[in-house]
Length: 80
Image (cartoon, rainbow, N blue to C red):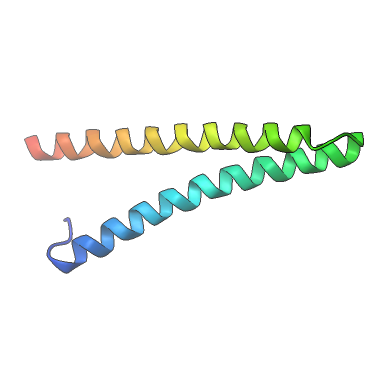
């Protein structure tokens, strides 16, 4: 059962803020991994930048796939 009225706005806000946190966590996690790798190899922050970009790409793909799954479930629920 989906929420109605004012609860829809809160439900949407929680859903999209969760997606934003997922994206931020992916970027920060891979950036931190790159920072640790840079410190271990004693090089300039090349891997930190690569990690941040890789995290952004993976975070975007994760969000896109999650939205596709939600859209498919909404469409199949409307038919029944």
